[in-house]
Image (cartoon, rainbow, N blue to C red; front, side, top):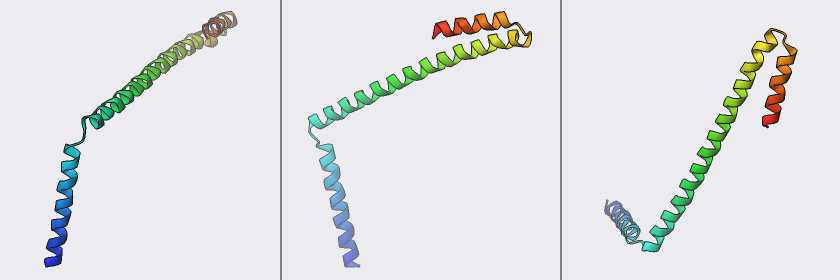
Length: 91
């Protein structure tokens, strides 16, 4: 029982020492964390912007497919070719 209590006391003391060390970190460590988080936020913003561009492109492609369905169903080869040419030019 005594050993168990001593072991618990040591673990508790170690936890307190670690917590105190974390609380007393130098300001430069906090500044480093802030810089790291700023870089991460910037990277995430860039990824969101890329997703927006891809979604916009997908919407454009969906519009082209939708435009093609009517002329194809009516067997309008000239209109189909015109739409495909316009799409190719936009690339």
